[in-house]
Image (cartoon, rainbow, N blue to C red; front, side, top):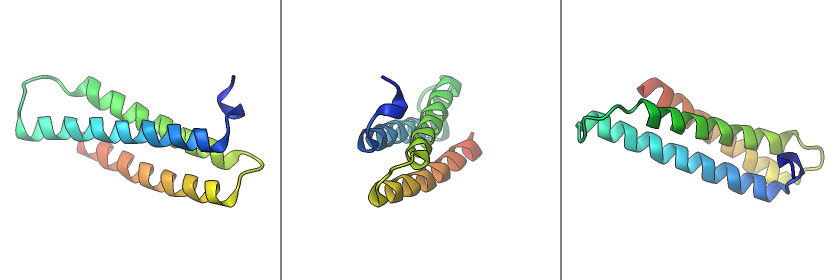
Length: 95
């Protein structure tokens, strides 16, 4: 089954999950780096965080681009894109 064929609610749920996991991983990376808790490289964790956030934004955009989308789902997707884009810019600038 293709991602495009999934219902809008499922795509929005997955977008939220990928986004929140990406934000949590990015926050963990920043905390470890700033407080120097461990002396380990944070590059891979930052990469996974950014990839998950980009994937979440992509899923939200996929919902908006569908033809028959309810108004509530479209508004949720727009809000999710704004929040995820702001988080993505924040984590890119903190690297």
